[in-house]
Length: 262
Image (cartoon, rainbow, N blue to C red):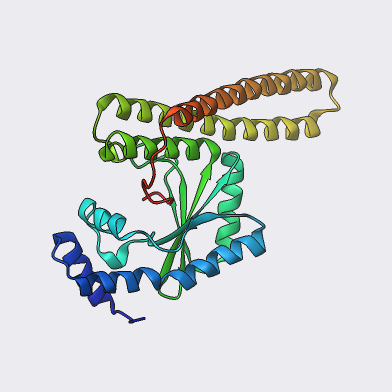
């Protein structure tokens, strides 16, 4: 396998962007893609053995996806962070934050891209970019809500219009995805707030629990927090089921996009 310099890689990317490629260029690109395999296996192996988690992914982004990304974004080929990538789907935003911390502790050289509050066309997730020598491997960490939304966005892009994934195409679908993405943000932000409030009430009970009057008020507040948390959980489950149903009722299509989102 040839070892390409950064300049050679970026010149290859320029030719891909222009569509001015030869058979030799395609072989070079294939060599470059496959050069991420070892780093990918190291990252996935470490996640499995050290964290006991099971990522899904792919060791090399497809040639078509690479070309599309170069044309869509002002980026050089050597700067693409998800040539190799894997994904972890966790139940909720609290577990998501925990896993992100574990990944940062597992690998010595990481960069975190948090798209939860500042999404990309409605897409919310956290990407942990792991550098193994000169190779980047992207680890996507999604909550179950973020994941089902992303799957639906991908499927609509495959079946209806590729522009939907990037905020274009049919206005109804774009508005639907944006609205449900905003709902996810509200529910998951609320989840963190109620967790924080439960901790604060518990601390106050530990501090003032010996005072019968204050204890009764704090217990009433604790019950109210628990009731609201239950309501939020029910809304969260309803939204998940609605998105899951929307996804499951769409026809299947062979092929489609890469398993790991851009």
